[in-house]
Length: 124
Image (cartoon, rainbow, N blue to C red; front, side, top):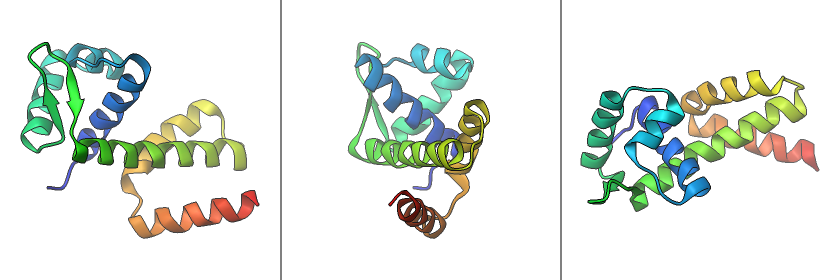
């Protein structure tokens, strides 16, 4: 099933928080993103029903194989874009972070692949 931009943001945040702390709950995602608990609860329900996450009885959110793959894909795009904007174009860290966050969702796979190849070629 196709996932929306907001769902990708939730998965990416869950991945980042899990890497930082090893344990992620809905409240952690709400705090990180600055969203209300009801918004997070709704998103968690959708992500769970779509098979991207599991929620343990203790409230821990765990990415499924599909969820982890999607989260890593989105986060990888984010890291590449932020780095390119800052290191190669000289964009400020604040703007690079914000722009990368938006760009990661809209690039086609073809454009992302070509951009990745281009960045690798200029780094050589």
